[in-house]
Image (cartoon, rainbow, N blue to C red; front, side, top):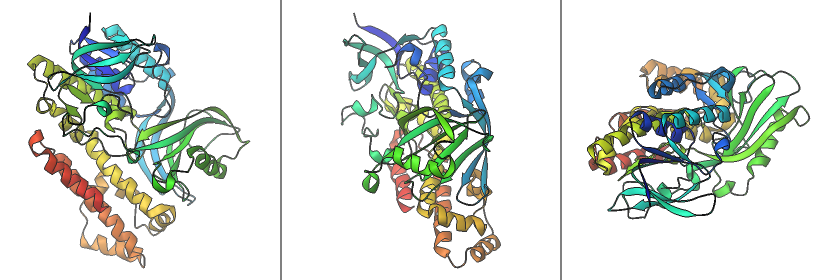
Length: 450
């Protein structure tokens, strides 16, 4: 007999557990599926950084404890963008934690199971079940290599970058949903946790160190991860001229400048991939909601996806409940989910992607010039700074400081102007699918200009 649920959630990472908790809090019958063993759920490369504000907001929404003391490796206060200049010219507020992904993930999973969520671990989602032009369940393969059908009113795809459900939909199913995954959508990355011979200077910091030899987005990261411990890594889009570049070789070459071999012990080193583009412009289809990495929800500048995934999962649960209560599962009935995303972190991430493109076009040396001349200041890179109005006199002052390299000033001005326009577009996200194509075309036209 085929098992039937109100909601099937694919993937037990942050977005998946959040979706399951949210749905269960709404009184729904929820199945959570993950390909990992139960005891391994929560273990993942990257994603250790999380915003304090976001983690506490999530905890309040689903009534669970925020990160506990034993789950926090280090506290974070600022994000620093560095070039070869001796000081941090750009430091942005970034209050949060470096957490133990496994401990935190396991605790949230336990909370979900105790609330009544059912778990199928060691189970791989193969493809969606389509009935009457609606996603109505999934076909899965168990650890015993047995395939079976599972039915549901709603499916929430939180299966990570590869988006097991979204990318396996029929091509003619919901034309407003992007079903492809291209190399330009994500960065391949390599991350290590190292223990130094001596104390580091990273306490309270996330550092993005820009390097000429690292392809887009162009930096190696260093996060304080406890006493003498550092989370470090790099990643880049592997396409065109970067196809033959190995992420590990690029990483180790950059590491020699800052932490040469012999000055540390490697505790853990693994590869992975992370989305590096704006959120999916539309993340719903009949019977389907997409959240987390599967919907490109990480911050394109820092790759921090843990917090956005938790919030997206909460939104997904709310919309799934509405759909089930009203027995309305069409794209238009789930559309509010998109509005919630773009009125929340989505708008910021749209602008952050423009910033990463601009920084990559500049490169470290040109960025250093702008920083030395104070053409670019740290407040210019905050959301408020990008969106603020400037007087003609402030523009004249900037122009004088930029002499004679006005092309750099024009690039930054273009990036700021485009950011402002995308912000307006996000505020005016379509209330229904009717005007979506026009909205999407306008957004993509702006991206092509940068």
